[in-house]
Image 1 (spheres, helix red, strand yellow):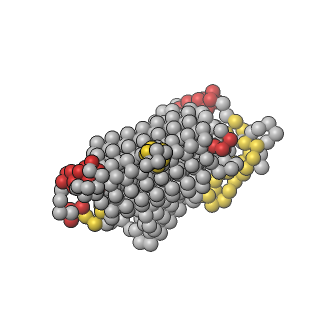
Image 2 (cartoon, rainbow, N blue to C red):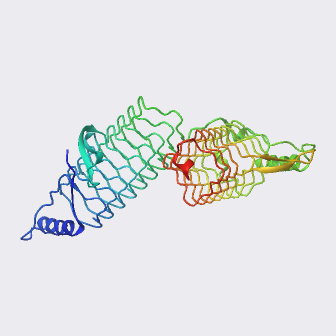
Image 3 (cartoon, rainbow, N blue to C red):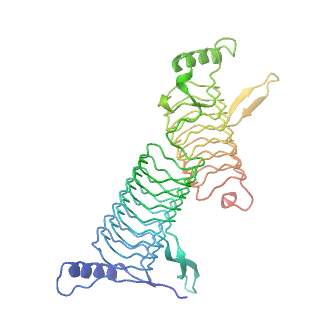
Amino acid sequence: MTAFKKMEQKELNELIKKHDMFMNGRPGGARAVIRDRDLSGLSFEKAKLSQSDFTGCIMRGCDLSGAQFESATLFGCDMTKAKLYHTNFTRADLRGADITGADLREAVLDGADLREGASVLRVSADEEGRDIYKEQQKGNVVLVGSDLSGASLQNTHATKADFGNANLSGADLSGAQLQSANLEGSDMTGSNMSKTDLRSANLKDSIMLGVDLEQADIKDADLAGALTDDQSGRAYEEVALTLDEMVKKHTEWVSSAGRQGKQLNLSDYDMRNIRTLAGARLTAIKAMKTMFAGVNFTGTEMQSAILDGSDFRKCDMRSIDLRASSLKGALLNRADMRNANLSFLSFTQKDGNERHTPCNLEGAWLRYTDLSGAQLRGAILRNADLSHADLTDCDLRGTDFRGADLTQTIFEHAQTEGALFDAGSPQAKR
């Protein structure tokens, strides 16, 4: 077990130049065959490296945007967090590669081999601080959390590949072999999966809105919690009054402190046909276990609402006012909640004392949710899943995060004075 030898940019540039000469039949050219080298952070931007061989190389954080790797061998490579935008991997051998957190937007992987194969794993560092790697047999291709939006993966061989929480929106996976692949929590909105083999695939909690599954094989696939176009709950069309009429009665109910009108109760309805509730005044509505996925709530007033267990996945909730609302167990994965207000409301009691009612998000799911600039002062987020959520510039003073999953949650420039974290967590030491 030894450290991989580091390559410098100058050496790589020379190899790319000679490979291009080789492919064009010019004298002095040589096919690029680089194995078991550390290429971390180097730039391959727009390089022409079709039929090259980079078996087992460490390519963490490399910039391969616009590069040509058609029919190249990248067996067992570590490309975590690499920039692979618009990269051509047509028919490339990517078996056992680790592509976790990479940017693969509009990349082309038609006919690529993403099956299991040997992969390299970091073990430790040597005395000089260099990474030491060893080979692991039968490693699956890992694309966890990668951005593959708009990518082409036609006829790709990706049996047992791990696409967990990946963004595959608008991707073309037609004819791909995804038997036993992990797609849990992935966003496949608008993707083409016609004739795709998804037998025994894990599709739990994935977003499959507008997915073309014509002639796809989903035998034994796990679709528990998956968000599809199928109706969930009662159809809103079954309601006698129009939404405008119901909102009007609800407004009367709020204004008269319950003496007139009627509280709006949308519990157990599928409201996706509404499309937008932007700017609506829905203070104190009741909507438990309601399907709102994809609905536009921009600037909506929903203070003191009861929204427990409702599905807000992929909703546009920018600048929404949810102060003092209850969202216990709600699904908010991949929602856009920038500048939302989820702080407390203060009420003066009969004895003259003030009572603070917090926004309650206990047990809610906020994976990959953008909450940048949001107000969460005093909010309850106990046991919530905030993995990969963006809390940049948030007001988190007094917020309760105990028991929450904060895996790779972004807290940049957030105010966390008085916030409650689990003892020993990195955030508790801020």
